[in-house]
Amino acid sequence: MTNKIDETTLHALKIAFSYMPNAIEVTRYEYGDRHTLILEHINTVKETLLQHGIDPDEVYGEIHPDDSPNSMY
Image (cartoon, rainbow, N blue to C red; front, side, top):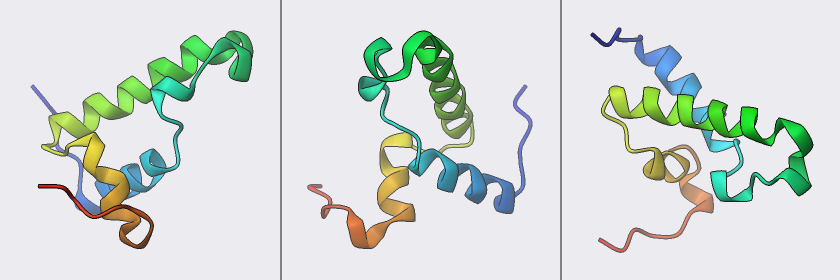
């Protein structure tokens, strides 16, 4: 069972996620021994967004519409 979070908290999670690095950018070279933990954190946030019906790939464009390319669909 998924616990629903309120819209303010969900919006705050989207903002925080929009500033997280993309998983492909998280390497041992850049982040040292913490790279695995950082990848786990990114995945936790992505899973939470998905559980609430939000596509993580669309979050950046929603939060930063002036800084994202136009949708291709």
